Length: 117
Image (cartoon, rainbow, N blue to C red; front, top):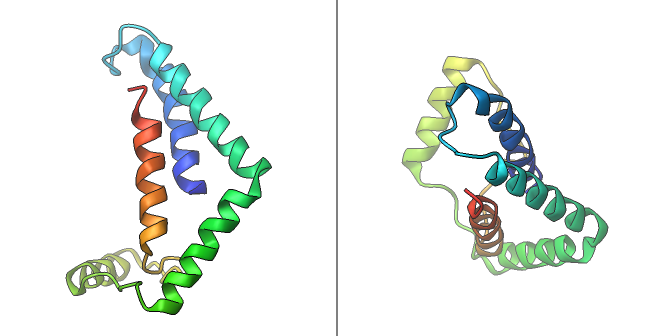
């Protein structure tokens, strides 16, 4: 979630810088400003109220214990391994399969942050 919020905090800043060039397609900077403020507020809420993220972690652990977490498809794993061979990157230990609660929160947060656009 932290990476997603960082992308939505940096994206509007870059968009505001590119606004003068006409590459953004917006008539005003207002959507960029609203998106930055919204991402900053959600990130601040996540940091100040840790019970939300703690509950999400509990739900993920329960899903792992219940066996509800499925690995990525074999096709996706082959693509990741091929990409790592080409780039020389190492496997990220934090890049495991997502549980239903994690996927739900990630998608809801993405939809919320895309709303101003």
